[in-house]
Length: 226
Ligand code: DC
Image (cartoon, rainbow, N blue to C red; front, side, top):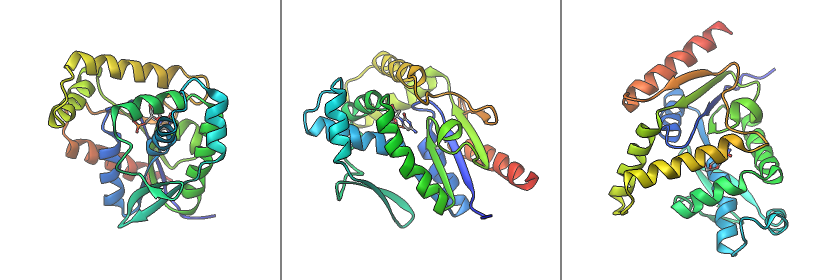
């Protein structure tokens, strides 16, 4: 018997999972694990090595020779790929799209899921991703499915692009989000879907603080019942 707390937050791209999950972890005084960063790290290595995203065997070969580790600095996740901290190099569009492709491969998922389960077995975590409540941590104490309308998600992403001087239009971003949603929810192995025992939270029209308070309320409720 242990007294670790595992909180799963799943949902589609752009629903605000990482911002919200980070704040919730801080409020609870536990660590936040961004599992998407691990898929991004594998994708980043494929892109750097010019491994085609269709070349399954080459990706699996590369995967066998890849070391992915997570460390924490001041409770913040740092991702090490083959010993190098690449946390700040994996947020580009190219990496986002490539991550969505390589995340379809069961072998990639298995390797990363093992790391995720190991961490959650040792520490209390708020873990965000696509399959945390359904597959990675089926016994999580609390499962949240955080979503928002496509338009709202696209508007948020578009604002980020504008801040980076990107010329992308809102329509481009809507198409990009639809494509990633499609990839993430139609893959055969561990697709994005709401776990039966998850609580659905829609962040459309709400600010960050409202969503954080709503989820903290759900967590409080669930933990006091058990
Ligand atoms: O959350 P994100 O945008 O950083 O995730 C990058 C990609 O990785 C996304 O397209 C879906 C995939 N992913 C996944 O399949 N399972 C997870 N637990 C986390 C991310």
